[in-house]
Amino acid sequence: MLDAKMPEAWRVLRIQSELVDGIERLIALSGAVTVFGSARFAEDSPEYKQGVRLGELLAAEGIPVITGGGPGAMEACNRGAYPQPGTSIGLNIELPFEQKANPYQDISLHFRYFFVRKFMFVKHAVGFVGLPGGYGTLDELFEILTLVQTQKVRRFPIVLVGKRYWSGLRDWLVDTVLERACIDSSDLDLFKIVDTVDEAAELIIEHIKERE
Image (cartoon, rainbow, N blue to C red; front, side, top):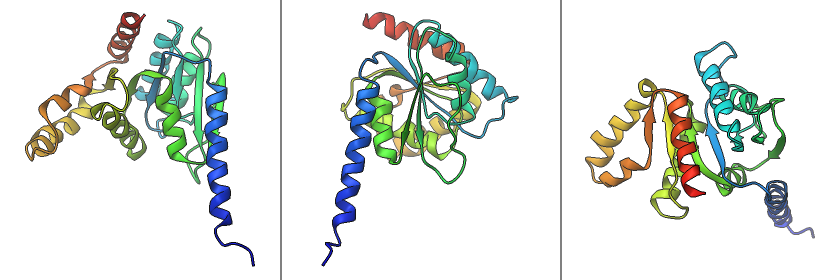
C-alpha cells in the first residue's frame, strides 16, 4: 500500500531544492537592497516612475537591487537598475494572477513557496525600501519589521516612500497598537517614512558606506 505521507515528503525535498538553488545563485551577492511595491502600477503612473528612479540611484552606486521580479513597482525598480553597474535581481513567485517575470533582470529566480522567497529577500539585504503596495507589500514589510524587532537579523534601514500613502499606517500603529501596549515606542523607530525615492536612496547609500 502506498504511503499516504509520501507527497508531503516530496514537498520537503522541493522546498529544500528551492533553498539550495537560491543560495547558490546568489552566493556572491552582498550589500543588496530589497524593494517592495505593488504589481498593479502602470508604466505611466507616478509610482512606476519613482521605481525606475530608485533602481537607477541604487544600482548606479554598484548596489544590487532585489525585487519580487514581477510587474508594476517591481518591474520599475529592475528596469532602472538593469543598465547600471549594480545587479538587477528578481525573485519571482508562482501565482494564478499578476505575477509574470519582467524582462529587466540580470538574475531571475522562480519560487513556488512564499516563505523560501522571503528568506532570500532578507539573506543578502542591508536595506529595504517600501513603495506603495497592497497585502503582499504589507506582508513583506511586517515580516522585515518583526525580524529586526526580535533581533533575528541585524538592524538596517527600512524606508517607506510616500508620506501620504504610509502616514495613516503609522498613525494606526501609534493611536491603536502602541496605545494598547502591543509594541514599544522604540519599535516606531524601526522604519522611516520619506516623500521621495531620492531621500530613500540617500539614507540607504549612507548606511552602506558607513558599513564599509
